[in-house]
Image 1 (spheres, rainbow, N blue to C red):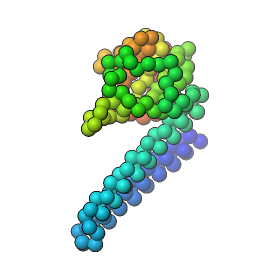
Image 2: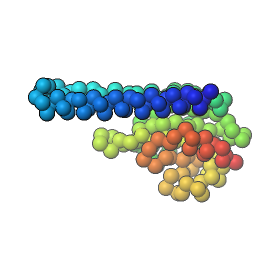
Image 3: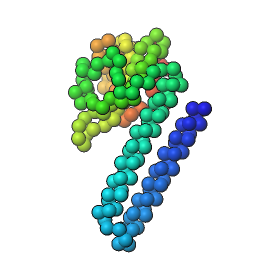
Image 4: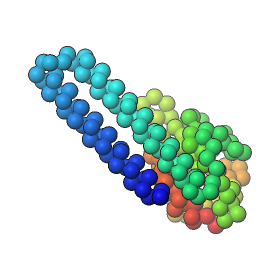
Length: 177
């Protein structure tokens, strides 16, 4: 069932991107033929990009919600239960916490969420996986010291420069000790 939903979601994303490419080619042709003033064409392109970004965010939220439901975890939206970012070395740049999933696996409490790091042009979206316990519980050796740190009673993994696909989150959580 979930495989069908993910396949349909991928198909919709590919279709939308294909449509946006066609629109871009059409707008470019209209500008080249002097049918549409360049200002209108640029505005239309910006609206198309915003639409694609919103679609991608909704698709990611849907994937995370399905993962939480399928795995028996709790999807919390933007609420972080019992977890503070303040002590983490990267926390001063963190904002916009979204798609929070809380659960227990292998007698370990964990929190997974997406957040934005940085400000202005240097803003990136990242996924954070935090497990209550020591770094060894998270399998820190496989990720390296630059991505994993101990924050109070939590072992925290910060993805590098991107949000983790759901399959990678599942793999990380399956390795909990």
